[in-house]
Image (cartoon, rainbow, N blue to C red; front, side, top):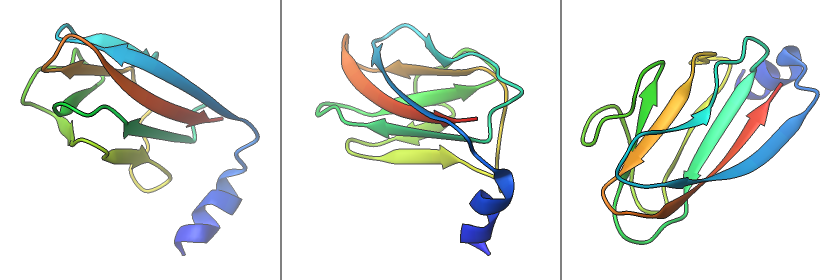
Length: 100
């Protein structure tokens, strides 16, 4: 079932990117009605990053990405709203990929 969700969604383009996340909320992906998939991967090494879905990210609230962790929005839990992130240290890298 899980594999068939991606086949049915017909993702045509996977666009990768990176966002520097600090202690102030930053938009990692603007709202996109064409979004079919979004994956985020915390490849920093010092503290967790928190995601805001459709709102400003707030430290210690929302989706928590531990060090080396990730999260995906797919056909089961897809959101097309703006995604934002905030960290607990001044600079960490957040890698992401968006499928449309």
